[in-house]
Image (tube, rainbow, N blue to C red; front, side, top):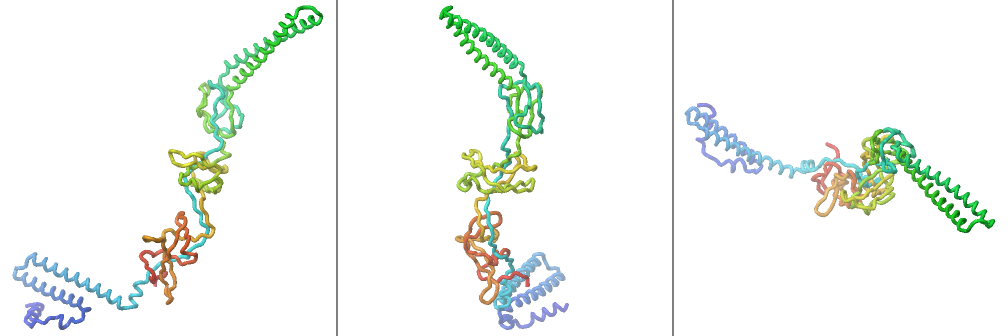
Length: 429
């Protein structure tokens, strides 16, 4: 018979004694009792399995049942060990103190300039953008004197339209004017002669009045003819199309032989005077006014421009439910009309503001609070809860109106699950 089986057999022949009453009177020895019981059970099971294997009576069900029993006993032992360790930690003051100290990071509460901005999307626009159009009805282009990209001056001739009909009309008006002038000179001569004869008593009064009437009628016709010549000249001038502003020919969408009637065919842009336009939501209508500081951020160029609001729109746009705000900016080579920018309107500023990172802020049902590190009466570093009243929030910082004065050691990391008076440390021991 194997030695293990002999020992088991001998143990079974001995009188049974209740182990708990003799060897395990202390409750803290219960886990060890369980471990001994598990070892004994394993020995018995192994012996049984070995005996059964020899006899050919072992079954799979029996082995599974034995495994389940061992697993249950192991779980019970581990639970008891864990509970016992917790009880030891509570009784051991040194172990308890070390377990409750929490590692945190701190930084001093800052007092600094705090600015709050209204961030909006905007675009650059030119103050002088002119869409060239003829003063008359337009017509066929006979000569084009500008190309896209050309720099043009105010009053510069850009193109000439077909003027054949206007020239003919002007020529006819001038000829008519010359004819009336000749008739008027003749009528004046006749009147002077008739008047001289009348002074000498020769002729009749009717002849004198008739001569005078002819002169006055021709004078009126002369004035009308002169006006017709002016109208003809003005119509002829409309065939010449001039630039109304200084700038650059951004668009020239017409060629010789084509009809020109305006409709944005020639666009002149003056970039020497630029402005930024942004739509401000209507809920800011009481906060935004003319003259407020503005920071224009041009992300594409990595530039910032400081300016101020120069114009506030007087109507609310139906599509965006906002009003237009404009700010003038100086010309720079990297600025183009219709370029997207970020418009930051300064609506609040405090020179000496207490500020903290917004991510350190915590709240409960009633209050907002943060944790700071302070020294307790025994000189240990502990976490102290500070109730605070907030001001404005911008970016990753928040203004504190009350509750902090500046200089406190604000806990910025590890503040989760802290409690009032908990011991903290800023270094790993």
